[in-house]
Length: 371
Ligand code: SF4
Ligand code: SF4
Image 1 (spheres, helix red, strand yellow):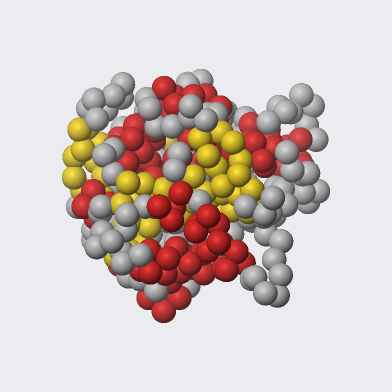
Image 2 (cartoon, helix red, strand yellow; image 1 turned 90 degrees about the vertical axis):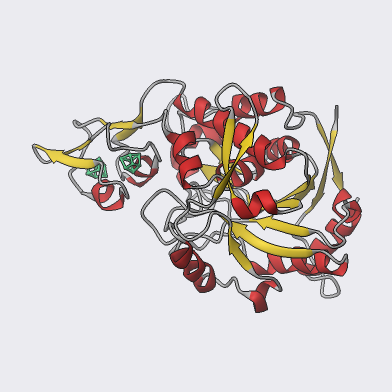
């Protein structure tokens, strides 16, 4: 099967600014064929961690919400709470963070509902019977929605290489218990010879799993839930995932959660490939983008859109000041930009598993709406 991935770049004119061009992409793509009438439509996005400035602009969400309302649908913006220390681990903090980052009913034209409720426990168990999970714990408001729209900011991710549609839906729609189940095979360890005793991991572990012995950090494996946040925050990469297949298992689990969210529902996926940062938007910082801005992708197929974004990014020049340029300057750096940046990751095999469980296809054709 060859899936269609619609695309537009960021070239604009006075007559057609980006919001209008984005709307033309939605109209031209299969998105315009969805039956929104009287349907409750979950627009799943990431509101950005406080301090991060690469996350998706609210204007993109407004274009999508307005389009759905024109088709008589009832859109809402949604995300689930996080596992780690930060500004989005319960609904109160999460809504405040969304507001501070510019998401409200005026800027986006629709309400925000935190899908797994006040403390991240309001979920529903969706039966899936796949390799890792018989059921998936998905935020209740996502399960109750009639249509799922993924609106994702395409960027890198320290555990999965890329963060696109599948990450947005699979990991993002898991309730806090669901996220723990996805993460719990990947508890990391500190390589103490490399630890510079800065304390960053200790301050950022939401579960109190990090302690110090002889001024070096260590992780209590019984307390750690495997959220992986400390891996990304350590400034000297002293914290490593254990086992060579930890990130592949995470990919597989995330794919199974994505399957649970989309199962039996109309769904569509939009990925904005700009400000492509080296880490997830869960980080309170974003650093230089690794490649120039690419454009907007839209597809009914979450596998095809993730593959298209990843391959397009690999075909871009590398930004000279970025962490990717540093990674690529190392001897024997992998060809693939995401693997060069995060060497324990492999997005190809992650997407191959997605294809094997019927989430979509790795074969795609790009339909550039300007050609
Ligand atoms: S020690 Fe475990 S629970 Fe704490 S941040 Fe690291 S992975 Fe998460
Ligand atoms: S963040 Fe890294 S260097 Fe700092 S204390 Fe933790 S393990 Fe050591």
